[in-house]
Image 1: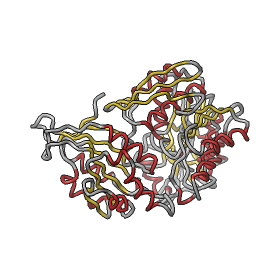
Image 2: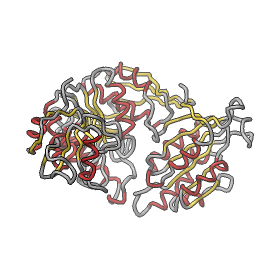
Image 3: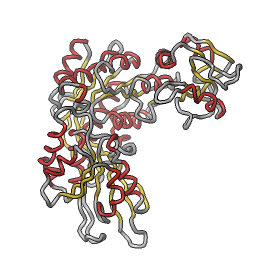
Image 4: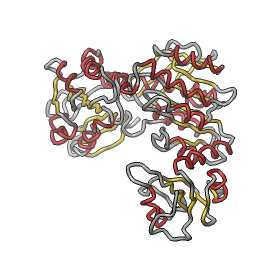
Length: 477
């Protein structure tokens, strides 16, 4: 097997000094998940990675990328010594990108980056060797790490790029040098760092700044700020492909949510596409059409992609659907859990509420007899000065109004809870942790339960508690 990095190649890429003649088959920043033969990168974050170099080498790391030999590490230990570890990781990423002939797609957006990345990985993996991060590695260290892990013989690469503050996307796009750049959507997220949606759109548009010559921008044509994205593409002289219900290029003709499946009709270049996703959600449908547009722009077969996308399921915590069997002795005594506890903003919450409203509870299996649509909602964070109003106004959402019961956790969600009619008011708690011991009062067999909130709201604790009510089995499709 060809090594991912030799000592000589890594030293040349980073300008560092190598100790030992080593070969690495992977790159790791975490000793908890490091595999034998990985190059361990001693980044400084909450802890200094240099404190874990000895442990990494004991676990079989091929070498460690460091600024100095840490105390307790042998003088002949395999090391790559550089002036700055993060800068060296970035250099490895750029070198890995330069040596491959892969067709590269970069994805950003306020909502749906990771799920869209995974959709694209699913379809491109059927048409060649595809490389993408196994998690949501989309920041200043995640993007270079993903690139540094890319084998030279990769056919397709999918790079997710995120941001929290202005000025973050351009350097990451220039590092990734994509052939196709996609913006899933622009929504109220990270508004604490931006004055308004237009500011977020201008930052998202910067994903086009690193496009290769002849590169293509795949843009959401439906959103109010689409003109900002399109204007940025025009200034760069980049070819644009628009997707969405109102888009001229990849037009979404119809979306039907039926139970646990979404059926989509789309049209592009005179060709009709009819395909399905094994998960409910209008937001998933829109991004799926965008994925076909990206696949086509990369030179892959969009018809095959439309067929293969049906095998994709969301990553954990991003809309996964599962059955929790609450009593194995009683046939059918179970509830349906929609785990969307990883991220939340008003746009993504509305999309999830539409899925819940379209779900069908089961009657006659629980204590309450009638199955219910239940939402357990944690705070949506980083929304800026209007955050309280944004939470309260969700009470007017027509999908939420179709629900039977809404439980809320957090000081921001208290505004929504207080605005609900009494018939819908479930429990409110200051923290998600406080809801955990009350979980048997929150849900019942026969219910369809959505759990959603920003990661920082820790509403995933409620997901774990619901899973512990019984035996878990994946939703069958």
